[in-house]
Image (cartoon, rainbow, N blue to C red; front, top):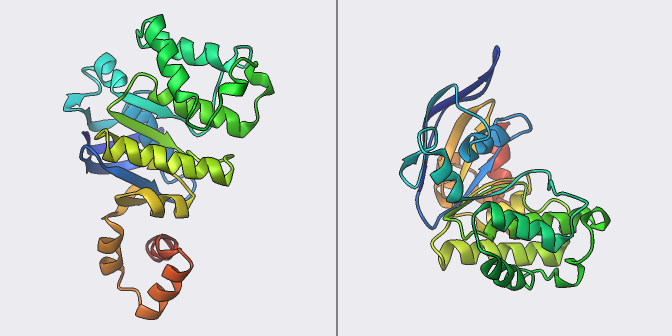
Amino acid sequence: MIEIKNVTKKFGPLTAVNQLSLSIPQGTIFGFIGPNGAGKTTTIKMLVGLMKPSQGEIFIDDKDVRLNPEYTKKQLGYVPDDPFVYEKMTGWEYLSFVGEIFGINKKERDERIEKLSKIYPLKKILDGYMDSYSRGNKQKLVILAAFLHTPKALLVDEPVVGLDPESISITKKLFRNFAKEDGGTIFISTHTLSFAQDICDRIGIIKDGKLLIEGTIDELLKMAGLSAETLVEAEEKNKTLEELYLHFVA
């Protein structure tokens, strides 16, 4: 579903992403983790078409992002690292506006918004202007907007920043259902390692623009060769991925 082939992104003399290759099949939740400035957000912006690679190719649903920008954008739901909304719109107006951009007729837009608004839920505040929303409620709205046009894949940058524990639990369920029941693909960049450990099928660790390692957590554990004592202690604290991250990045 998502194919990245030898992608490099340069900003002048700085190489933000260096020869990145990844293949993420349909129905997979992929976690992309690494230090600040590792190239995670740059990668997501290239996937969604907001930036162009300096070299290499990106395919969404077997279509080249450069050659088929309109088609590939329609296959994607995008949740940026900062929940940008139009604050002088109500929540309902914002969701309706997003649906209209994707060509969804008003009747269907209203039905989808009604259904989506029950997920967190947000229905009680949708008639209020978004400049009164908390950071967490803006985040929820942006997540729901990403589902509005029934995409085949989600590109998600720091999805749970600002969310309360109940909303994080709802988000996990929402993402799992999208992948496992609807066959959607999710590419998640996050520093919240416990969240990634709970829902991701595969993990990629990036540092200084280079992919260090990629695989399931079990595969990463075998590659790391951590001691049994360390693993038992990490598992008891639900910090297995944290130990792996520190092992490969340090």
